[in-house]
Image (cartoon, rainbow, N blue to C red; front, side, top):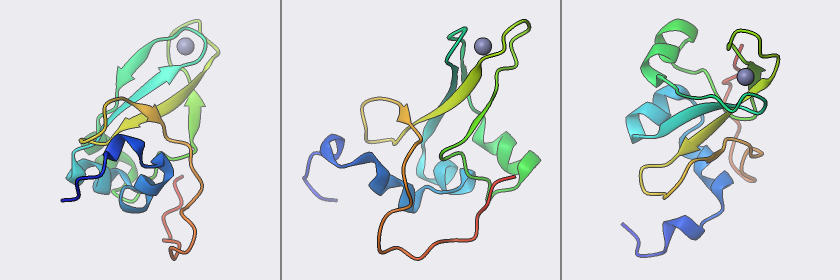
Length: 106
Ligand SMILES: [Zn+2]
C-alpha cells in the first residue's frame, strides 16, 4: 500500500469504493449515526442494514429521523475508514470521472 498519509486524502475519494453498506462492511468501515438535536450516537450495524434494506443500500448523503423518544431531530451518518483516524460525515458528491453505479437507496 502507499505511504501517503491517508488521513490527508479528501474524504469523498473514499466513497468510490465504499458506496454501499456491503462494500463498507467488506472494507472494515465503522459507521455511526448521530442525532443533531439530542446528540445520541449509535453504532450502525452494516450487516443488519444489508440484510434489512439490501447490500446495495447507500448511507451517503442520507439523513433520517431520530428514533429517540421525544426527539424530533435528524440523524446523520458518519463513517470511519479502517485507516483513518476519526468518523467523518458521509457527505460527498460522487467522485468525478467515475461511472455512477445504480445504487439508489430507498
Ligand atoms: Zn435525537
